[in-house]
Image 1 (cartoon, rainbow, N blue to C red):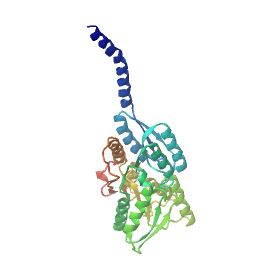
Image 2 (spheres, rainbow, N blue to C red; image 1 turned 45 degrees about the vertical axis):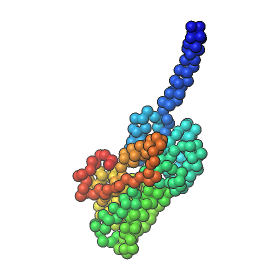
Image 3 (cartoon, rainbow, N blue to C red; image 1 turned 30 degrees about the vertical axis):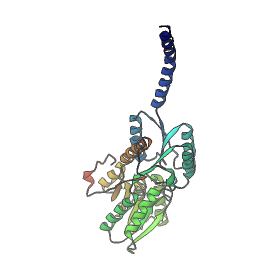
Length: 318
């Protein structure tokens, strides 16, 4: 009997230690993970929708999402990514300001063991990312070109691009390839619009000033909707909005659709930032759970024109 009580006392003495250890282990397992997100700018409602979709998935899993806005400055974005690494992120949702100059941040993420999900526009060094989730940007440009060629048989085209953003580069490439070697369509590149409304308006205003108040282009292709709408604003400022210029954007934003309803613009290839964000977040969790994920996930665009606008919600993103 004495031996029994001896072992019972030993077990009871060890129980608190075992319980504490088990509690600590369970607590560590249940601690929320920290995710990071950085977008080239927040000066575009598109990124608000994208972010909210990612955030919804992360928070529904009991985890935390922190976000940074580099305001189109890649050096600043790299610095902010280093800060988020120091804050303990395990996953980074990355929309780069510059598809090449983001590489130091990608290297830092790899060294720190941070999983990178590349969203909306691809980085050059894709070997550093687990998955890319974006619109089929090349096809988005194809759709705009096909629509344009049903409206006119020839014309000079002003393209508002951004050479450091591969999504816009690929859209323009799809547009140009679709036109092919047709001499009836002549393209001019203006690579300083940065995908921003104000900069695009300034670019078009400068062209109009150089042409003595005239605008000698039949078509404007904006690399995104803000670029196209900036061009429209410049035409309106110069009272040229009724000159019959075809204006195409890429996003399918509520603002663009509102102008489409009024007849000021011609068409936009859709993006679905909500779908991109949700798929990106779900892909991150699948990878963390040990599943094999697709290295490239493409979301199909659709073209919205005045003819099919009634089938889309004007005040909503796709």
